[in-house]
Length: 238
Image 1: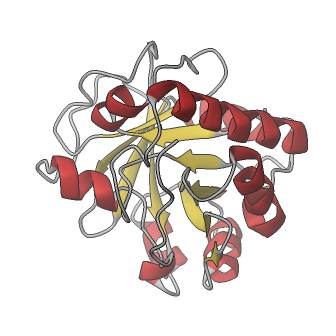
Image 2: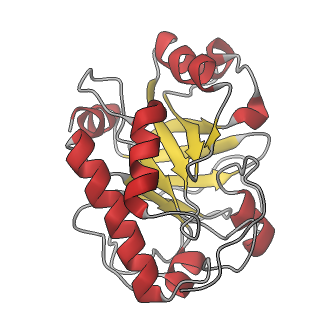
């Protein structure tokens, strides 16, 4: 196993390291093949108090909110963002930014669930999402081999499932995943893929379909759900 980074955890927004390493052109409206899609967004503390009504009026119907990073960071705006999106009528979920060199997958899954990342079958809560991307504090794959990274993700995913009854959505980019992971999660975990281009492109190993696509980070992270609104509700309900 590689050396653990000692840099302090600050707050890494979803996709920031993918944008840094992979670039891409921002898309106002993505070119989407499926006829039925749902517009959504994701936020972290970098957005502060979000004007949820304004975003709802612009067509956003789901949101993911950063809850935690590693086992030492909690989003101070989480309550305003998570409850606020729910209160305007969005279906919402929480996400965890993984730092696999800091602690076990189980430890980070438990920290996530204990600090906002749980799930309830209320029809408005999506399963938690695991944000797997380039290391903001050190080596790309966090000093882990592909098999070690696969084991870490499985540890997180299995622990989250045992705590909530749901498999976490996995957020990643195809480039990072294929560099750092050799396992197959396609039969259990919905895929949330990041690619800032007009098309979603190649998917990570063995996923045949994407569930959510993050297609731009300007002026805010925007996503599209692959299906009609009733399918989004089905994902929320499990």
